[in-house]
Figure 1 (cartoon, rainbow, N blue to C red):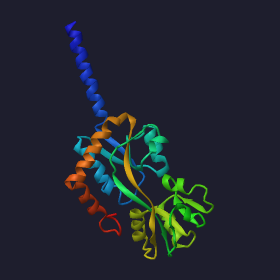
Figure 2 (figure 1 turned 90 degrees about the vertical axis):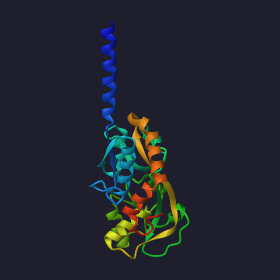
Figure 3 (figure 1 turned 45 degrees about the vertical axis):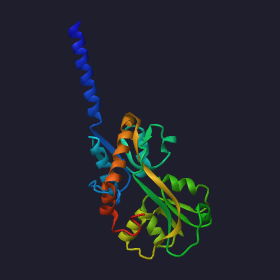
Figure 4 (figure 1 turned 120 degrees about the vertical axis):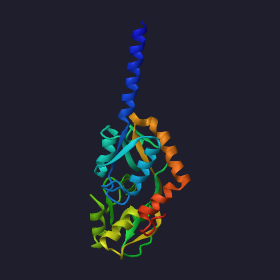
Length: 244
């Protein structure tokens, strides 16, 4: 009987070790190819998220997935986490668990080549609006608008704006100015006020939900000790409006 108990205990320890080993490297899906997340994993969010996992003793790897497929892939368990989405995605994707501390605050704005008076989403209804497919907050708030053009990426979006095919391009402020800088479109500026400002969050597949609180605590610690601000400044400080 003693031998059976010893064997059972060994098997339980082995199972526990295997379960942790499955989490030893978390694969995080990103749909960005920008200063927020880069192919060499040195973008702002890459560094923030990887450092948060490092502080709880877990390695992480960032993997690119096209925007609309990224959430689906994580929800289906193909990846362990989604790098950066607005709150509430678990309502549509029930296998996702939101980490309860924001990665960043993202300002969603209208970009234009001329001064256009806007006040809110509804003030865009009569304009020719461009958005990138898969950006849920933009899709939801322009639903039913008569002149919405959906494109596959930011290159197409800002090229259409540059050529006058749309009146406004709806996008993230920080990422918009990165594209403006890359495309040498100095005549493009954002309009005030922002259409929305949202906290953006890491999401875990429910198989890793026990990591949500530790990762959140690690993010808070990074903000307290200055690590977070140093990463933001190093990766985005050269852009107009990046500190907002």
